[in-house]
Amino acid sequence: GITAGDYVVYEGAYLGVIESVDEKTALARLASSPGSTQDVIVGDPRAVSIAKGAGGGAYELSVSRDVAVMSGDVVVFAGDESLVLGIVRSVIGDELDTTQQVLFSTPVSIAQLQFVRVIPRLETLAPLVP
View 1 (cartoon, helix red, strand yellow):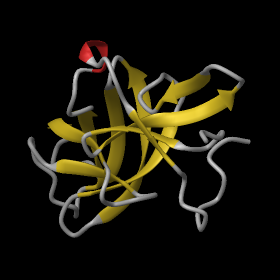
View 2 (cartoon, helix red, strand yellow):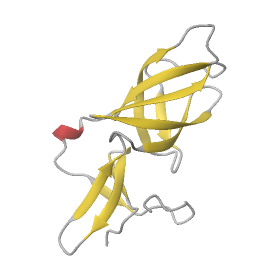
View 3 (cartoon, helix red, strand yellow):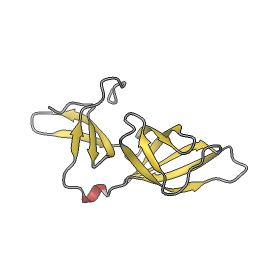
View 4 (cartoon, one colour):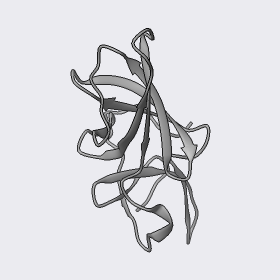
């Protein structure tokens, strides 16, 4: 059955995590919810960063200027690199900055989804829900 901490996905896109379960329903928190954070991997060389949810399927993160990131790059979920968290939409920063801000969004329209898939959280990871 479904348990708290399980992943919510759609066709290889990580959408969020199950927060609570009762007899007939499960409540999920979207990864892009304001205040949510996710460990992600992006760029070349591959860099680990913390993505912050901005709502509506949007995210932002900061990464070193030494990491090449461009529009269209894939951002993967560090908990399971086979799951895509989003697609880079823009990179902000000038040559004097030591970091660059990366804006990206979920690769699917969450509002258009009728069904999602729930997969068990990897047992080797730290719990995602306190």
